[in-house]
Length: 413
Image 1: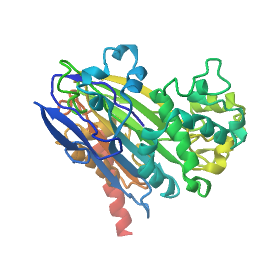
Image 2 (image 1 turned 180 degrees about the vertical axis):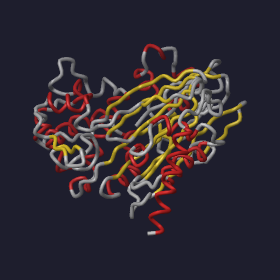
Image 3 (image 1 turned 135 degrees about the vertical axis):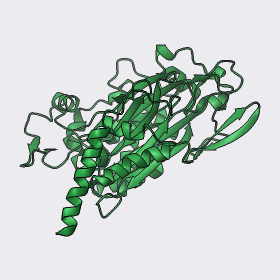
Image 4 (image 1 turned 90 degrees about the vertical axis):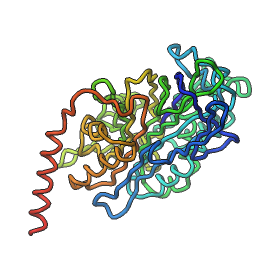
């Protein structure tokens, strides 16, 4: 999941909410004339899904706008973005504007991914410091791994902190807000206890931008030349950033599998990874406790005492200038078949973000996707100007021909 935070551009425009609440549009002002842009327009954000060869669709997406206190956003920015201030965004409402893009990969059912699609954005927007202590207490009561857990990113609000925050005097940071929302979502959803349905999420709220003259507000993400991006992630979905200068990809997420370096260290440090917890089957696939592939995610409540947590791994990136063309969010139905570079290359010649997302998903279908395939493409200031060579095209076409030959043989049989 993520927050886009900071933008600087001479392009007039911005987004704002007239009232607090999640909605599917952003408002702005250009030449003193208010306007509204629908985030679900195919020209603004591309969202495409496919069942693949699965009987049911278990993936889900969410694209919307929400509001987060401008002071909280300002406090959460790094020194490299310290020149952004709410008063330079046009007005306080403009400064609160945040865009949000979520992708949820349901495993074993739609219950949890559907709950997150309907509720997670609002939970993120509405959590408050008073929610921290009861959420931590309820999480510790899960037992096992969480008996030794001390709040993670929320530790400064707990009794274990040497520098304890005071509720009512201190405010949340963006990282604390996201962590609290993820943990609270686990406790709010009754289906978490009924079904083992892990959902990997990458959410991208995007928003507040600085403006040169402080009068016309913030530019939206597709023209902003300075954007603050926060990604909060659990599981094995991917967020990829395409460089517009050379077309190369940068991965902003890692897979949360027990054999990964960061997850192995987390589980070992807390006493739940001594080598016995990882079981590899005859196909070479590893499962935590012999059952769970992803050690971070929603759902799988019965495995929470064994270290399966909904705490997100949070990363930040300041995107400046027109050096980045677009973000791509994809589920593992695609990443299990395609490399990161192949995915961004499939989008480079598209006329709009929806066509870009279709190119990616349809290629997965051409290869005979066995899993649900979901893709979100978010254009940035460098959209339409991707340089460098499409180095993966020959390999992609070879793979497509091989898949067609194989499918033809299967049909004749």
